[in-house]
Each structure stands twice: as C-alpha cells, then as structure tokens.
Length: 182
Image (cartoon, rainbow, N blue to C red; front, side, top):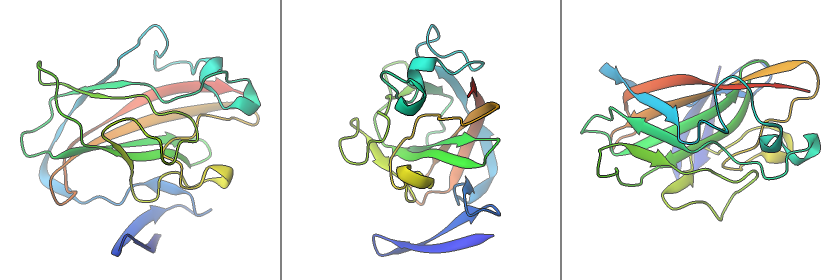
C-alpha cells in the first residue's frame, strides 16, 4: 500500500506494509540499474551475522549505539547521493532512512559515517533524514534507531541505493546487518 505524505512542500509516496511500517523507500529504479559493493568499515565490530550488544538500544543494554560505518564502491558516475535504509526484516520496522551527499575518497569509494542512536538534528556531515526517517514508536523521525528486539531472534538488513539528481535509483545493494536475540 502507498501512503502519501507532504514533506518540505513535496508530495512523497512511501511503500508501507500492513501495519503501516515502511518496508522500503519509494524510489523509482532506472531500467539499467547496477549493483554496488557495500561493506562494513569496522569488521571487528560489525560482521553481518551478530549485532554487538553495545550497539543495541539502551533499553537492551546498548552502551553507545550507532549505525555501522559503511564503505560503498562501484557507485555510477551519474549518482549524486546515496540513500541508506536500515530495516528489521522480522517486524518490518524501519530503523533509519538517510541520504548521504558526501564526497568520494581518493580511491573512489564513499564512506557513510556512523549515525548516533535517536539522532534527529546533530547528524554527521553529509547525512540528512530522508523521506521522514524512522517510522516506529518513540523513534519516529530519527535518522537512525538502534536494534531493540523484544523477544526471539531478530534479523536486520541494510539496503544502499545510489540515486541520481532526481532520486532515481541507478544502483543498489542489500546486505545482512546482523541478528540480535532479545
């Protein structure tokens, strides 16, 4: 189902699931969209298998929760920004939706900085909330909300979209962010 929202004078359509949670950002994909390479900058902390306990929400014992810093390569020349979507696959919760407009490194990769848990205004350079940010409970409107599983084992994923000047997807990649027990 699509939900229409007015943000900053622009009409946006967000793809939402049955419970109203955002399941993916509403981005048009070009016919020849390619694939990106996405990795964690700190592989000692983030491995795509387990979310470190210190990176979970404070309610679950997280001491300094933030998103993983990401290294993105293979970004097409027509891309003007990267959109990063943090998602809880089990509960269909959106844990963050941001746009990154920083410059590439000298090697041509982009490094999307870590985003503090619950941040709405004091964001790392180049990061802005995109299409309303998070959509769940206390976290509505935040750029990023750390995993906060309530019971069972929860799986999280990250999708990175390279977008052109009109926010059309020219390349993308989904990776496992990791899992976390309650």
